[in-house]
Amino acid sequence: MKRMGMIFRAKANKALDRAEDPRETLDYSYQKQLELLQKVRRGVADVATSRKRLELQMSQLQGQSSKLEEQGKKALALGREDLAREALSRRAALQQQVTDLESQHQTLQGEEEKLTLASQRLQAKVDAFRTKKETIKATYTAAQAQTRIGEAFSGISEEMGDVGMAVQRAEDKTAELQARSGAIDELLASGALDDVSGTSKDDITAELDRLSGGSDVELELQRMKAELAGGSDSGGRQAIEGGNGTEQAQGQGQQQSQDTPKFEK
Image (tube, rainbow, N blue to C red; front, side, top):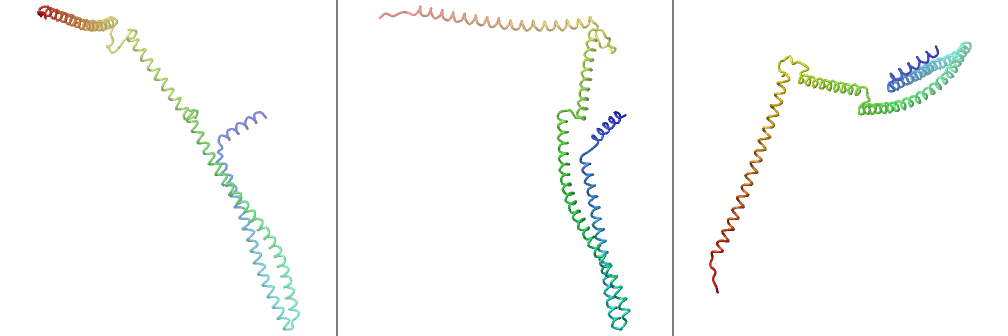
């Protein structure tokens, strides 16, 4: 059971690894930090509201205390010492409440300052995390694009692998069809297969056509040889006739030199 649990956790971790996008994780973390910052700000606002409420209460109590003091003075001026004592007694109770409220006010003010400072620090951290997040996302996107380009160039990506396999299958089918077509032509030529269209020739007709084609070639070759031989004979005759003409001219020259009379000095 432990081994099965380990295998299951390993498979689940690998599946989550493939499904996880760091950019989405960073965005989610940033969103959580913004929510926390919003809660801190709401806490600061709540503390400030409570502090403001205490200030209003202290202001009201101080107003009532001042009023009781005036009433006690008037009662004492009228000779009503008992009323003046009661007014002063109530005023003392109000002053005690004011003192308690002032203590609470100072506590709330301190909490407000702490929360404000924490909010400012958290805001700075959130801003720094946002900058870092955008930098990491841009770097990850660039690295992912470079990896895909490299895989496309090297042909190891899934898409390019499918294209390469399709091209290979097309080439294999083409070669197979070419080989089959050549084999059928050879079988038709040898007579192993019958041409149902009636355009094929039997063995004797094919042999006669071959001999006829060969004889045509031989006849053409003999004609070319004859033309070459005729050209050579005409050239030889011209050379011989030219030589005879030269000899005749030399003989005539010698005869004229012999017939010319010589004069003695």
